[in-house]
Image 1 (spheres, helix red, strand yellow):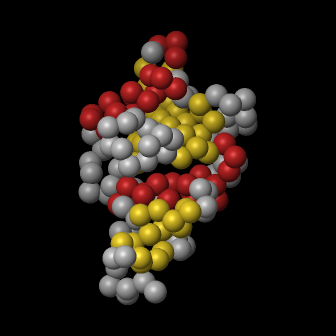
Image 2 (cartoon, rainbow, N blue to C red):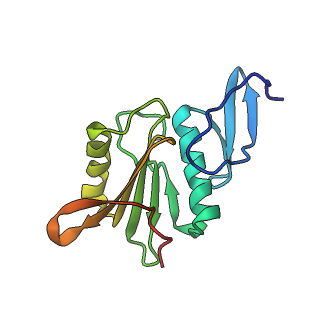
Amino acid sequence: MIDSEIQLPNLNLPEIQPQLKKQDGKLFIYDFHRKRDLILTPEEWVRQHWISFLLVQLNYPKGLLSLEKGMKYNQLQKRTDVLVFDQSGSPYLIIECKAPQISINQKTLEQACLYHSTLKSKFLILSNGMKHVSLRWIAEENRFEQLKSFPEAPI
């Protein structure tokens, strides 16, 4: 049973219907994609909203999503929050999720660009759940351009 006093922030993304549980004084959210309970951190709250948004509203194929590859709790190891592949298996979209109270700034962009420099995705989204920055990589100009919308599901 979840305490009624738990207040989760409303995000600037479609609402989700999370399965929450409290165990040993910690709050967990069930991740339907990875099929396991995860500690509900502010960043995880944003990530779960993005997963739902990609799958439900934008119709991204579930099999193309990869979440938090690497050692999940080792803050020193680099890992993407959400990585989407295209149908050929190439990186299509990286989403860098931050907690709602963390601003989307140059440091956030630089972190996401580190992942992009290795993965060479076509798109990059920076989000704290409240503010979202959607970018498209223009390879021939070696730069990103900001988009007014989110990338469509890969074909």
